[in-house]
Image 1 (cartoon, rainbow, N blue to C red):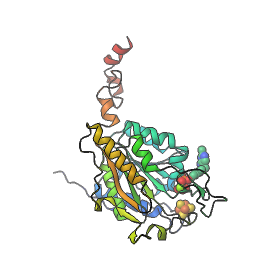
Image 2 (cartoon, rainbow, N blue to C red):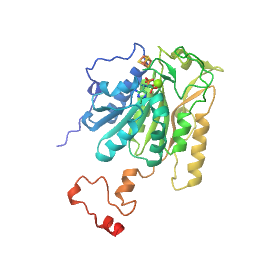
Image 3 (cartoon, protein in one colour):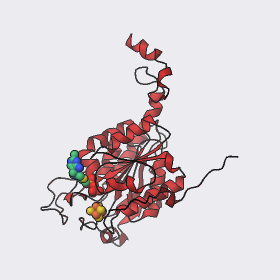
Image 4 (cartoon, rainbow, N blue to C red):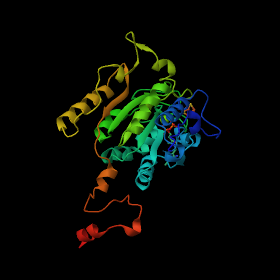
Length: 310
Ligand SMILES: Cc1ncc(C[n+]2csc(CCOP(=O)(O)OP(=O)(O)O)c2C)c(N)n1
Ligand code: SF4
Ligand SMILES: [Mg+2]
């Protein structure tokens, strides 16, 4: 008899000493990831978590799963390689806004073009936390957090709009201090087949004195600043992916939400189900090559490749 095992949050915890500052929003995101994995029920040995450099980059140390703390900005190429070499793994890339949208931005954009089946979670505190609070690419022009000598002189990146236009097939936004709802969103993203991206608004009580817990939970024109799209009539899903008109319409709708000012939408902005990179490669594309995922390299059928090269 096959007994299906269930998992709890504690199964994804480690004993590693945590060096995040007390009150850091990263704790909430860590809990969300653990809750999401427990809800999906994926065993820890089937999960690989890969990070770049930053406070957020320490997350794999605190998650009971395979972990890889890579170089600054390199979580996405590492996650891509992990998934392609072992497609049975649930792969999650994590990191900060500086890591992902500064040094790693080329990887961020190009991952959207491929649709490899992994999830990318950005801990977005708008600062370089680890290097003492410089403004990151998500810090808005003219803003000055307490670790900055001067106000930001560059325009900010809108991660959600960039992800949607780059081709990510699941795009959403969460909030570090609402781990329960963010865990639900992460569970959806991890279960989605293709590259999913969630920008998670994260408080950094040490360096970001602009976007604090009080700011996020403030009222805007009599309504809570943050609201969940699933509680509105917003429909994020492309129902017919072969309909280019619907794809464009849903992308424009999602980009409009990404630029909403005043209130802050949370939840899934955009979702489309299309073949993953792995599935397309396995179909024999491009150039008549067979799957690069075939683990039995010695017995690979290379006749199609030979025909192409002849
Ligand atoms: C190639 C390289 N350049 C710069 C650094 C210095 N550095 C370490 S972390 C970091 C930015 C961290 O900011 P973010 O990615 O937002 O993560 P956070 O600490 O805020 O979680 C920088 C610039 C580095 N480690 N490697
Ligand atoms: S510096 Fe900010 S982001 Fe880094 S651990 Fe401390 S509170 Fe968290
Ligand atoms: Mg940061």
